[in-house]
Image 1 (tube, rainbow, N blue to C red):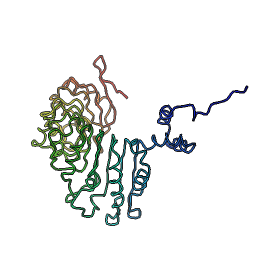
Image 2: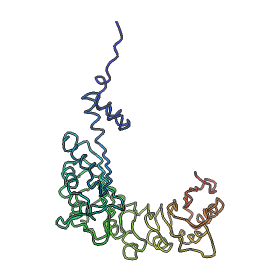
Image 3: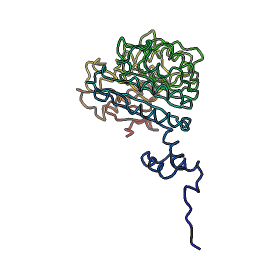
Image 4: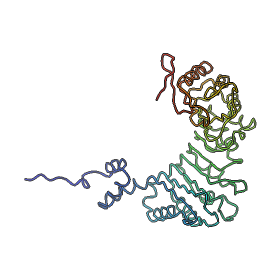
Length: 373
């Protein structure tokens, strides 16, 4: 009697097939979906669980056609909607694109129709590039608010909204406030083009752990919420003695602060140390044109940070890698080592330092600083 090799399609249960399919490259998985109906049924759920769409819009390609095709595909497959966990949409333009030539209306409507069906999302991103610059007058609504109005995402844990911004463009309304009040499980929030007041209910966003956005918006987000990680965008002059104290009103101490999106003068770092001495990790892009010590040169300009670092009682990582040092001599290992020793005397809790050279230094058990990479 000859041996019979069983067909894998009929031997493995759907759960096992799904576990296998999840680790396969997407192009291969798309090919497997064509093998049989059963493989397609399992593979489609994996393929559609995570959706990333990026449209490059120009004067000659005036519509985000990838977004439109994606939405059409989803609306034609209602049996897959509950499998979709991640839905990220990004629109971009070139500098030479004529905004008046763009046609974003159809894609916006399709997005709105689609999102109203995606009740099981874990992560949502709408980064709509020129949508607010080229928007027609639609009852004075921000383009993102037009899309999310009426949507429900009770399981949402990560949310990122934004569009290109300039003075005079349509601002957000209370629709955003209502939306944020309807996502109680949200842990991570990014609002890249919100620059005003958020009128949130006191019990909104009870699980929020991280926020990225403008300083003024952060001043309304943090109080009363367990935010541990904060990334600020804009200018360092936006951080004032009016909004900075509000960061101390979170229900847990702020641990991670990212200032890599703005050029920071040392005086701001001093103010932060005054109000937020419990910070454990700082990532910062210092502006070295405001020299700390005019008598010093190169990376030794940073020696003046010692009195500032002394005010941080829990700082373990100082990341200066975003700092631009164009026009200054490349730092040497001896210079960086000397700064590590000097700063750790001022701030004994420091364990790692990343310099603008991208070199990371770590302190060993013997108290000596060595390059970690």
